Image (cartoon, rainbow, N blue to C red; front, side, top):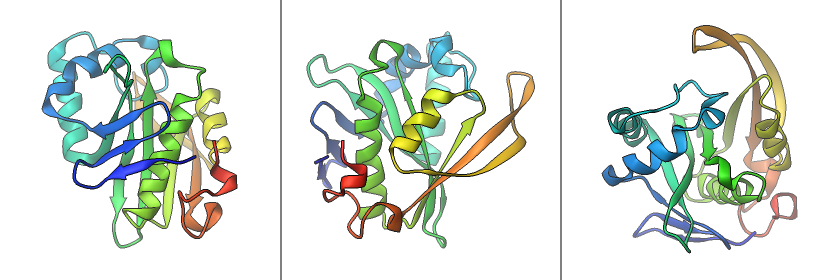
Length: 192
């Protein structure tokens, strides 16, 4: 899948999406996305109900993530986020995180966005490895990661705690060498 990266604006363009860095004005979009219990079901975030909660999540993303807002070019609505976090600079490693508003599920949009973010991570940020953690039971996310060439590496028992209980997590990993010598430049294993 082809995508364009504009380094001056730090934006990614895919055939159906614009991915731009989150800004201080994006709290209402995050409230729409994370205000849905189905979106937060397998997430350490509680379902949001106030703009103040969304602003707190936004501040966490701005401080600790290289996260993009997924924008529908037709409506200009923010419909999800995708990005990298938990940077290990010496190891050239980060983790992938993503979410999508429920009305947009099942259209292949997150696969499109994640492909662009993965290519960005390998080509622009010079990563060697990208991790993903998925809660046991979140089969949609697990299928997406497998389609993106991630390999399942471990089951981490009671690895995370949220919403009053411990959760087992699948650890998946993607290496630069798993996708192509020049990640993001037409590799058939990551093609849309």
